[in-house]
Length: 109
Image (cartoon, rainbow, N blue to C red):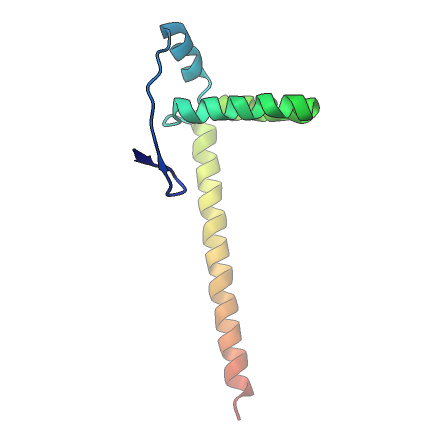
């Protein structure tokens, strides 16, 4: 039994795959540590979406394909941008907190 990212216990099963199927699944990975279970879950989700909304499913496939084709340099740039945004948000929160403290001190007679 393994804990899922949501903290729930999951029973793990073993399935047999041909080497070709395994290779094809590996080529569908968006990130290096993505599991075959995650890949299969995405595929099943897209299959269900195709039945309900084919255009949206096509957009989802194109999005996954773009994510999969990112170069290591693009990934590095994206991580740097995320870190910069995080730092800016933290700075904004600190500034807002300081402003609130100043305002509360100014209102005290």
